Length: 222
Image (cartoon, rainbow, N blue to C red; front, side):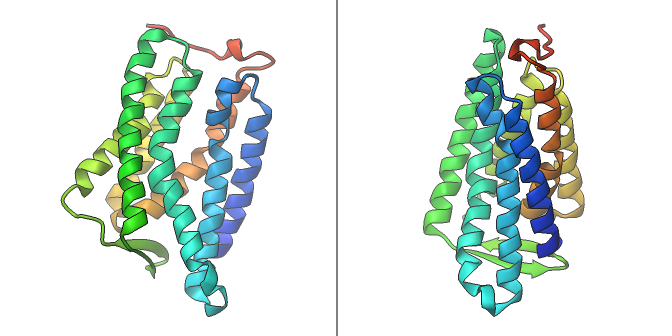
């Protein structure tokens, strides 16, 4: 979380608990990747909690590099591929699956780019104005195009899904990204992940629709 260590740990535990509850709603293996999103968000927020401690106290200095790596690995490498993959796996409409494969390929390309940057370039987390800013020496020229591809790969699958409630998640993600870009642009990585983590409770709501059988998830076929 982007406000304090206490908020990060509290939010991380709550979101992780939602993640465990979401996993309990899984009725078939194809739902596992999607259902695990809240749990992964919880782990990500807990890692940023340790990062807050490391930045504020030399007693936790040893956790600085590890917690930074975990948070950025989740934020930059995991999500652009994980979200389209999770939607693709639960999709049963063949026509909708085709563009989802394209979006997954886009997400994987972003993941590989950020994985390379995190392996060979430097990132320095800083506390600024009550938030964490991640300063990096990543190349400047592809930053905007890469983020656009990241955004498309992460958000569009939620609107392409035949699961109606998935669009609620997509709308919340889109609005949160817009709000973050307008008001917290310098802290986009931290703040947007905070909003996204909070909204991951929608995933439990989506899975709970399945009831006792996964085929009962409400779908819309165009």
